[in-house]
Image (cartoon, rainbow, N blue to C red):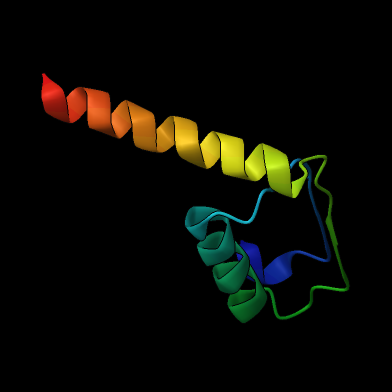
Length: 64
């Protein structure tokens, strides 16, 4: 199915490893892709805050 995609729109992308892996797969296999639209409302500050929160959650989980 992915090889037939002509247009893909992804909103609120932050650039995390999982998203980049999906984009890599998409670009590798979507052979007829004509347009890829990516948008992000996040700022670098938002990204850093989410990263700190995720690390804090991991730390709290490890303490249990």
